[in-house]
Amino acid sequence: MSRQDDELDVELADHGDDRPGIDDLEGDDYSALLGDLDDSDADDDLDDEDLDDDADEDDDDDEDEDDYPDDATEEDIDLVVAMYREDGKPAASALSLDLANDLDELIKQLRRVPGEAGALGAVSITGDFFVLVRVRGRKIQVLLSDAVAANDWPIARDVADFLGAEIPEDDDDSGPIGDLDMFADAGVSELELEALGNDLDSDSDEIVEKVAKRLGFGAAYAKVAATFDL
Image 1 (tube, rainbow, N blue to C red):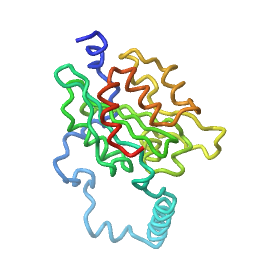
Image 2 (image 1 turned 90 degrees about the vertical axis):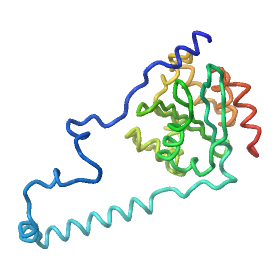
Image 3 (image 1 turned 30 degrees about the vertical axis):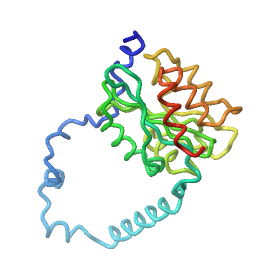
């Protein structure tokens, strides 16, 4: 096994919820969050102003839903691929196209991949942008190659929301966002990954292939990518 393979097993940044006491909640038991408020107190405190606030919140939720991008269709999706190492050897597998519209579900599926050092997920949409997700248990790193894509595509919006990033509206502000150093332990620097994200001369699936090669997954990735109708 090469040094690069060993270094892929380095601990990644943890986006998990480490708030004190959060692990003490059992199942769906939210009673600890409600304090000593009983039903009569709740009824007394509920006035017209509260009702107005609730109505405003409902309106905001409706606006958020209306603003959310429509799902990418099968024709829009170039590929959804998982890459990992099994017995020290690079491996890749095709994932369901549905995962190209849902970051949370993509992360869940990557956690199930039997990789010794976690797994890398890659999504490419219409040759315009790609999403990379590196997962090992609760440790997650994500990269979106084009922040502006979050205005039009669910997976890109999910990444921006996950990162808490502002979504630019102007193409002049376009560019990669996320964990540009996610492969630094494997010899792919932040600057190199940023340059790949800014490559306007290549389709996004071609850039994903370049990343896969740099990480040692070239042949395994190419075999799986060929099964998609690009």
